[in-house]
Image (tube, rainbow, N blue to C red; front, side, top):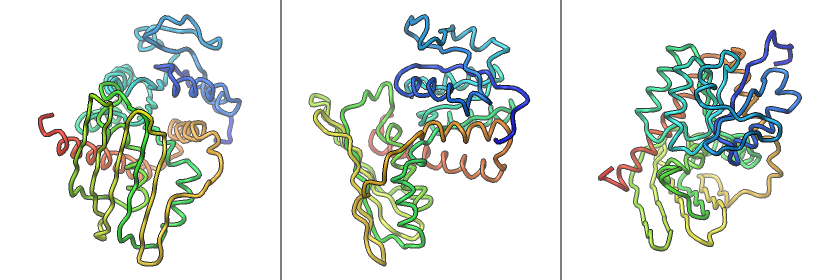
Length: 295
């Protein structure tokens, strides 16, 4: 990424909520703008322009020869459709996690990206956080006996963001990246719609028979927090100390995407990443089936 590119990739941002706004900001970063050229944004709202960036229609974005890359920053429920449309149109795609709310749909989209010879990149900024770097260093070489990860936050609209195992897939990704592929033992859901309260409790097992409990708890008045506890054969870890400010994690994720566009990521690394993403999506879908058998 040090060499000046022969040309820049034209980019459209789809969805200008929190993530989309950050993406627009980062696309204007001097380092990024050497490789990427922000053409416009797509939104269901009629905004005209945003920070001097012009709004364009979805149809124009799909047809434009100038646009080669789409950033999908809309609600999770719309990701699959947008990814499919842009891949079919021959565009590279960066999508915020989760890429889909279905294992099969994700599989289809990977196959479509391969057929079209295009990059499909699922953002995982949680793996670029200082807390995760600390955790990975702490657990390296240790054998887990049991552990828990409990996440709390205010309510989230399931229709837009998916079942908690999907909307919370960044926590599951942490566990998989720290302890390897996991087996699902059990999953339960306490869902009190009248109180806007929901609690998903999942029991998982590592390949070495270590036990992990993952809890997603959402309700009014619950602050966004993460509680960790890991017990190893040699010592234990209770929560993560303040590991510092997570600076420019979306920009770092974009750098990874640029490396993929430039063909600078090995096929082995791409395959390993895809395998991990699909493992997490498969677990999320299995958890949903256990908690909501009718779906």
